[in-house]
Image (cartoon, rainbow, N blue to C red; front, side, top):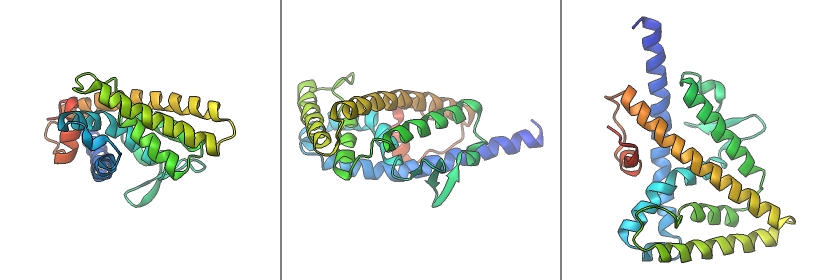
Length: 213
């Protein structure tokens, strides 16, 4: 390995570390938010953990819309406003993933959700009843339906094209689930390429399904 290749790999590792550190900090916010969803803490600890592990990344993508500037196509990262150019040390697959993330976030921003609608959307992705392994499927389904109906009610109050707005939101949530799967794949590949990388405990715990080292 020549010097330039080594430096490129180190830069890529540094970017991943910054991203992971930022996500790790935000995970605590998502977990705290989930505990305040009415009915969430009535579920078993097992189901709560499973729902969080599978929905936290999608929730983080929704929160990303709060720190993303769609005009300049920049994101607040590490206290700075950065464009895609700041992530050029990532490999092509990782950069394409980041591009897809920003595109989905932009589509979400275009829906002009207020704080209540945003909170309900967060709760919606954190209560997915179709996850394999749930103990109380019916309980999660009932909670999910209540949240979905509440979101529909709020959309009807503040959006003129209510049906179109709900359909677009459901399309976006499907995109987020696909990105969640891609994140797990990229995370696993990264952990294999940098076997000595030390993941923060909270990150390793939440994304343990990616088989982190």
